[in-house]
Structures are given as C-alpha cells and as structure tokens.
Image (cartoon, rainbow, N blue to C red; front, side, top):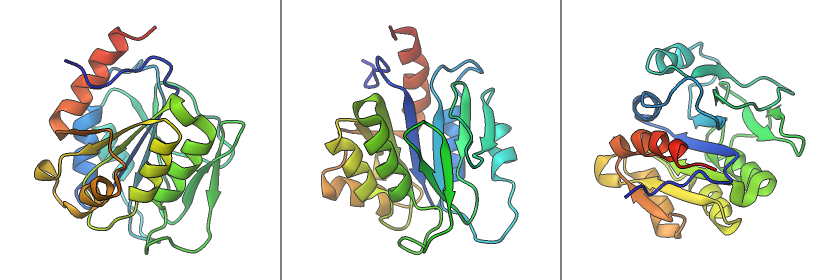
Length: 196
C-alpha cells in the first residue's frame, strides 16, 4: 500500500535539522530527474558559514538541486534549498522571498515560517514532511499545513537521528502519517505513476 497520493499536489515541503542532510539525500535518491512536483527543503544551517549542502544533496539525486533565489518562480523537477541565514518565504505568485528578520527558535531559516507560507498559499495542494531534528521548529508549521488540509508526514522517531523534532510534531497532532525514512522516496516515486 502506498501512503502517499500525489493527485492534485503542487508542492512538497521537507524540513529537518540534525541529521537532515543525510535524511533528505535518502529521500531524493529514489526520485527521477523529471519528478513533476517542486520540492522545497528547509534545513537548519550554520549562519554565515559557507557549506556544501547543495552539492552533497545533488550528488545523491538525479533531480536538479539549487538554493532558492529571491523572486525565483517555483518550477517542477527541482529541489530548492533554503539559503543559509535567510527565512524562505513563498509569495502568492508562487515565487520565493528571502527574509532576514529575527531567528525563530534560534533558527534562520525557520521551518515553521516556510511551512506556514505553504499552508497559506497551497493549502490542500501541498505535502509536508518533517524529519529528524533536535528542536521543535517545524512542528507548528506542519500543524498549520494539516489545518489547511495538506497531507502531513512525520519521520518515525525510531528511525530519526534526533527524535525531538518528529516527536514535537506528533505531540501537537500535526502528523497524518508516521513513516520510516527509507520508505518516503520509493513511495513518492511510485505515487508519480498513479498521478492524474
């Protein structure tokens, strides 16, 4: 049985923190270069430090991986990563906005802020996935997505490098489904075949 249905889905949002690069790479490695839905990834990152997150993730997948740019239009077959030290917001015209306002739960980018934008702009046409992490950023945003009728998935804490983030989402009632990390990518790939 495939828990993920992509019919009517226009965007997939993934959030994580400690252990998140490895977790995201695990998900994306199953996806083809022409995966038809854009993916927005928010990972907690060190501020003002150049990192190779984009190249590490790109190495694991055929999908195009890039940092989101200001005013960039969100397009299919691309995995966008929130840049270091900016909150990643989404405008009504389906473009990105980068925001340098205060940190949220000590984080910039904040998973909560991106997920909240996606809830408001996309509603039930979105999927939210919250992965491993050592704080509760993302839990409130995922709940907002769920309240907007998006489908919301949380990595089973037993398979998470850091259990705090997925447990926080579960405790808030933000999860439609608990899912093992290694199942997410294959389920997304299979769901593409059943779309339309």
